[in-house]
Length: 123
Image (cartoon, rainbow, N blue to C red; front, side, top):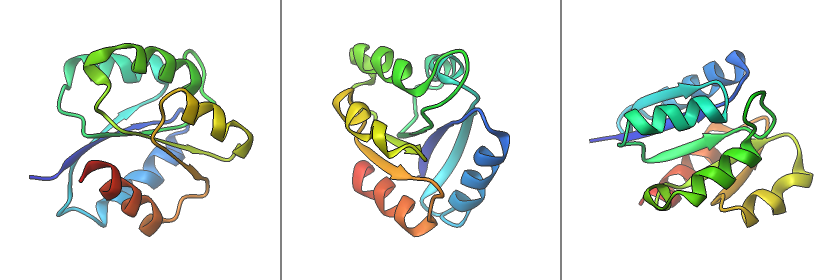
């Protein structure tokens, strides 16, 4: 059985690109769930408890990636779910790692690099 990935990004094009990258690994990735912001992601996590990893943007409306991490890591039932932050803003790397993100990748995302990180954190 493959992994279930939650893609959290307010930009439809970015979500579509990530899904396209992940489709290349259909043997390993079985489900992709999309959320438009951190609040939407929290709602999706409540109804879909089988998420194996989260790909998280930082800059989003309503609830950004920083605030999402604070809430998400404050909930003990989610502490084992790895989060990879994807952003163009390298200056926030230390902050997101301090808040509980497992890893950080700079946009634009390279498929092989992303997949290696997914395997690293879900193995």
